Length: 265
Ligand code: NDP
Picture (cartoon, rainbow, N blue to C red):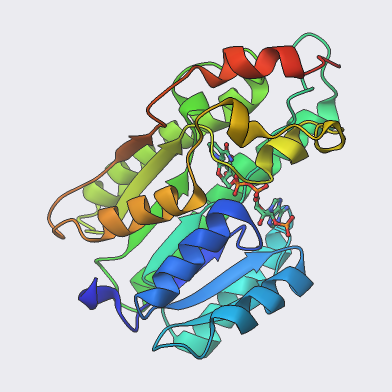
């Protein structure tokens, strides 16, 4: 990871779960990381916990990625502070498991589209433009997708649809970059179930049921995904690493979860 030390990264969704673990890992490898999310208090607390321990540092940035204006402000901040960006991790994402195709509410579908697809696309465009303007031709874009972007989840078909879109965007971007002879890499990482707040946010009321997801199924840890990012960053620069699927060694999460979830429109 030496060649990434001192380089600049942006990680979206850095206030929790997988994003938090990725920030910690990149800072540990000496990177300057702008971590964004809506919850500024959590970001600042996290930054104060990890900063000052080594060469790397985290810069918290309050940003609702549903707002293009917010995203543009964040990349302006990156440009003014560092002049460049080398790594973008499009991690912010959410699911509404109650938003079925038969009866789901339009605003829940739109919420998933805005964050999982549109924000990812805007951040990618801005990062690549900054890379190009600052002559960074060996940057790396990561899209945190999901196994639900490879196999339709019966629990969350619309969420699956947004993660299938991430697959298309990852491959489409790779092709566009190669067509202009850019060496910027783009990798989608598709985790299986990861023990974070994600499931509790996706299913209102689940937390109140005191369900210990980790005890009923084997789940990945956020660090497993952060390690996967580091793994891909270490691939030789001439090697494309387009898709990585990361799964726990056991279990069909959908089947095990189904009895616990009340299907609501
Ligand atoms: P969490 O719910 O723990 O974290 C989601 C992060 O996204 C939070 O930091 C949240 O911050 C941020 N976020 C959500 N909406 C916005 C927004 N509008 N603007 C800015 N930030 C936002 O989930 P995970 O860490 O588990 O999920 C991270 C990614 O991994 C997602 O893309 C998810 O789809 C994917 N994934 C997760 C799996 C799992 O089982 N956990 C499995 C497969 C994929 P804040 O609320 O402060 O804005």
